[in-house]
Every structure is written in structure tokens, then in C-alpha cells.
Image 1 (cartoon, rainbow, N blue to C red):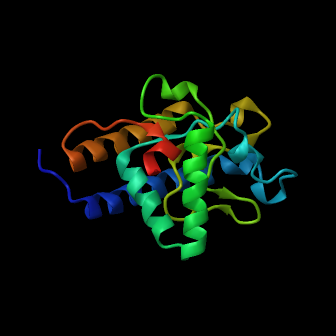
Image 2: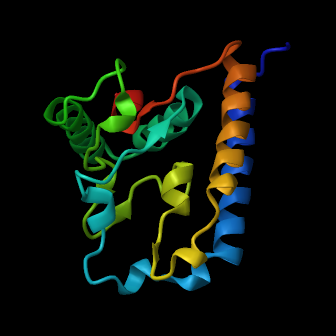
Length: 171
């Protein structure tokens, strides 16, 4: 298998993410409550009993690239939040990481998701407040996009890559 350059893989990742987001936006979001009119903006992202987003190394690179482009003071604040989240919620690379939850360190009240436009993870793109279960995007949609991301990681790094809790992956 020919290894992909990480820079090229990041562009391909953006295409996967953008196509997934367009599908969600076009076919499902109309049935969800708008985040703009939410009574508790960010509550879902900051709910330490709910958030359990895992990402791959390539997604972590995309997120770190966004963070690196923030002004120094803000970048340092985000870095401290990431470190604090890993520590406070006992997150690591070992064991059943899918059973651990945390408040997302990338969400800022008044701003929203810091990586929304450039590197928002697939589960976050799919998430919305749906009143009817029948309106939810099918799990297979996210699974297919995640499988494409997993294959892209393998093509980039030469072997299957672990899915880690977002704060661990970007720390």
C-alpha cells in the first residue's frame, strides 16, 4: 500500500467531513431544533455525562492545526482546557475509553465550537436535537463516514489507527 502524505490526507479528510455534513444538513437537520434558538447553547457539548467523542490521529492533526492558528493567549487557554479535561475526567489511551465521558474543551460559550468550520468531528456534525426518533440520521451514515476516515488513517500511517477520546488525541 502506498502511504499518503499527511497534507494530502488532511485534504481528503476535509472532503469526507464536508460531504457528510452536507448530507446531514440537506436530509436531516431540517427536522432538528436549531442550535441558534437553543435555550441552553452548548449544553450538549459541555454535558460531562454525555460527551464521548472519539477521533483518529488524522482528525487530531486537523484539530491541532486549527488550534495552532489561534492567537497565543486563546491557544494557551484552549491548551489548558484540554489538559484539565484529560486530568479531571481521568481520560487516557487505555482500557474501555468508550465508557468515559467528558465536557468538550473545544466549546466556548458565546463562540461555540472552535473547530466547527474546519475540523469538527463526525459525531458532532451528526448530533442535533431531534424530537422524533424517526427523524434521526441512521447510525449507518456515521458508521460509513467513520469507516472512510479509518481507511484514510491506515493509508496515511501504514496501519490501523486507534480511536481515542478527543481530548487525549489532541493533547
